[in-house]
Image: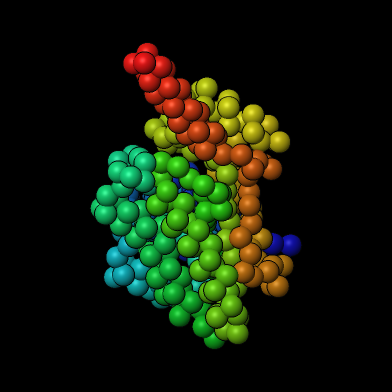
Amino acid sequence: MFDLSGKVAVVTGGGRGIGRGIVRALASAGADLVVTGRTPDPLEESAAQARELGVRVEVVPGDITRRAHVDAVVRAAVEGLGGLDCWVNNAGSARPEDVGPLLDLTEDSWDAVVDLNLKAAFFAAQAAARAMAGQGGSIINISSRSGSQPNPMTGQYGAAKAGLDNLTGTMATEWGHLGIRVNGIAPGVVLTETSSEGSMRSADRRRRQIATVPLRRLGVPDDIGPLCVYLASDEAAWVSGSVIQVDGGSRIPVGLLAYLRRIDRRLQEQDGANATAH
């Protein structure tokens, strides 16, 4: 079961974190791969791990928000490896400078986050679907739990992922007659090599997040890849239009709790200041 031998898959953002875990999982199942991302060295490392598993890998560095690059990635799959059976839209993030309250959100920050997480993901999926039309295939959008929950301090990221979830269902509906299945995966908090630079850099924050997870641990990149293997496989032939939560059973984002606590403290300070003034 779940044998991807003879299939060709593309993974965007395939050099690090969840993307590298997806590359490993697809390669372990026998898929040949095109890996793409902005930074060449991590892509080469990811490709080397996949090649050790006996599959062919094409590395195509570049910016997935550029349509010309998307076309180059499709060509690498179709002309270089002989086809395109699965496209994983994994590339997506928010920069440190994009974190902040909505009242301070700039147009540049909105565009940077939405262009990468929603616009680029759609046009990449569209290009993949055009290549798959007539033979069928599987498109997998890596979304986020933020797409279905309030996401204070990076509201534009949550909005982009919510849009991606909605598009996943619409693409599945419009492209189903072409034999193309479209599904989403919405991870919870996944620890990666860059976690120490983001919201999970605090050990206390990680402990508080773990306390909200019934399975009592945070995710790791290898928790996401196996589901991609299933969704890419023939065994998932009747699965389309779904967005699957992979979060250890957690339904409580610590970011929301932390924000509400910060607001409580601010209101208490204001009350204290008003009481002192009177």
